Image 1 (tube, rainbow, N blue to C red):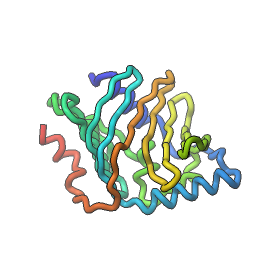
Image 2: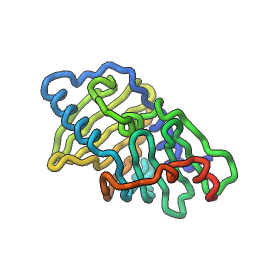
Image 3: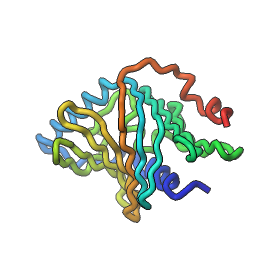
Image 4: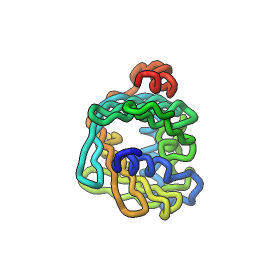
Length: 202
């Protein structure tokens, strides 16, 4: 069984699809989404550090690597034993303290697909529900079915940069991933996103 914060994070991963009808179609919203699309499409890879803030007040941290299309790795620092790997088809949760097989989810059924796809088009994806701007940041709320939860993506405005995302489960519990550092468009070998290789390191 995963710790509560890990279960909430994974529940958020599986909460969203990409088949809803966008409600941010007015001119200003469409312009903002186009700006964010351009930023995400220019970001072909990234690496850095993150802090995870859980609904119970606890925190965890680690390192992440992203390579488009479809590749991602989040490695939690000890004492948290988990690694989350996306290999382009599946998102796997690996528990380094267990010999159990990784739990896997199709990446196309997770909100990660919005960030990791080769070309991002948030307006056409149909999941954007609300756009808000405050204190130099833009927040996008996305949800395919509000009964399953929702996702927030937070961007700095000037210069534009992805700073965090928040998964919100149907009970209103929030799990925040804050990207505390980011280096973009770096060389990352595809083999580092192998689920099988990561599982063998336990």
